[in-house]
Amino acid sequence: MQQQYLTIKQLTDAVKGTITPRMVRHYHALGLLSPAVRSTSNYRLYTRSDVQRLQRIVALKQQGFQLSHIRKLLETDADASPDALMATLQRQYLSVIQQIVRLRETACALEGLLGRDLSCQAVQAGALAQLRLLEAQTEGQLEQLWDGWDAGAHTHPEAFGESLQHLLPDLGDRSEIEVDLLSKLVLACGDCSLLPFVKLSETAIQSAREALKNRCQIVADVPPVFAALDGTRLAHLGTSITTLIDDPHINAAAEAEQEFWHGREWFEKLLKLEKGCILVVGYAPSVLMAVCEAIANGQLQPALVIGMPIGFSHAPVAKRRLVRSGIPYITTVGTFGGGLLAAVALNALAESLIEKPNCHCHLRAVDS
View: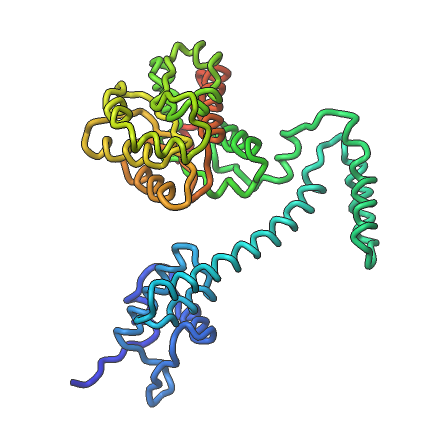
């Protein structure tokens, strides 16, 4: 049977998504796609196997893989051992981490200048002038410059709000309450790059405010998260606070994970939580997976789940399940997270409700 060929336009239509003929030509140049067969008019022609390969490229790119890493992954022999593939992926991971370190160093230098508040503006202006005139300097001389720029920092308290204005991206499309929540999360970890990794369902803020107004039950996964919750404000709202795994010796995510697995009573306690409660999970990914399982089985109906457990394997899985659960959620994509961030998220919602009980900006953001 004669081979049926596709034009480059038919190829992109078959793959769907945002792929364009220009991107296909770029992938050829990078070696991601093999040289195409040419028609008598010198047009590129493609087969169904090309469609499948391009679909794989698009899927891997959507998962965050860089094109150079995709090429190496696709070039790996299909019959290669799992160990060989893991070694390839590990090398790619270490390469990405090195890039992150270099970018983080650049970000730190920029934050040192842009993050200065109004009281440091004169020093900031002088620093920028010196940088423009700076010629080749040794590391020691640069350190002396920074010492001079930092000299006045002890004369006044830091104005965090002013610093964030210079460092955060434009959040004009977010509601006032959401901006406050995101700002507090950034301040809790000192990392402005956290923002793209924070995900909220459309009804998360609305559901949280309604639950808190109804004096809902607040459930932390472990004692350290419980301790970080703003007990005074939550008591003012009339909520009750409890801990799912109430072992006072738990101080790490690994301990919380093992305790949950070894004690069946924790899962049974989870199933008895009140309808309309707010769950704050900041340590054990298995707790969050159990929450999602109970929700899927109709055994648990929380008003909101703040799911930010720590972990490199199960935590990303648990968060993806939370996003698909249909329950209002606030989470951090991938391995970002921790008990402090989870508690800060709830504390911010409680504080905004007390300070602005009649604010409806979050509703307009959802409707727009």
